[in-house]
Length: 316
Image (cartoon, rainbow, N blue to C red):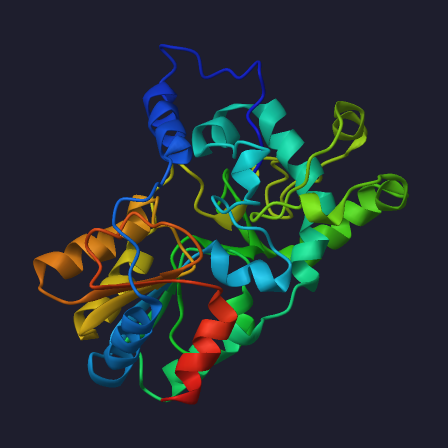
């Protein structure tokens, strides 16, 4: 997703303005320390016990993919420090913003596509195959949990590997769509200069306006519309009902909730913590920084994720 245009059409009175403002509040949420530090020895022992005895549902976020070269949102080097993601309302109702997104994504997506699962993804996939977990629900759209072979994965916010038409609903594989963009933009990728470190978690990258203007977008293969969208859930957009149901089923099977690599700033992830609290299911968090669940978690291990998961895996 990308920054909203200064000239966005979502002025007061626009039918989508309220949803846009609510999405901006979610984007701007700052997660700060709200609980005293916990002794790492206590935290890791508690999480190990959760994995051995309480069949956790694992919720993951962008932090689990940083070792794959994909930045997170709210970490010390997070992408929110340099750009503000586009809301669904902007994408849906502002043609210029949507064109700008696709120009940026055309350049940035190939780094996302080249990323590989890191040890953290593989460990969680192994735990799921071994029946240690009740399920894995990810807020990420990078496809790395799926690439690691995680069974029964619920990609709550979708996956960048598909493109949907907002006009007719047709779906297209992202690689097929990208091939059509390459054909429509000869020499573009060779000429544009970008810093790979500036690629955002949703696959776009900052471009100058001249490159946005030079970019040619192709239309839907079925109806020809250029109202095309990556098949992911934007800020200000609802999670599809079937994904909510699949995540809920995994939660019902679980005896606990373990959040990994996420600040839980967004309600779609934090809701599992609230539901666990109501159901008296223990909660634990494993993250590099503060989370929204810190005051509700029995165990809080603040550390690098891959080494922590390797430590736990060696003892299971």
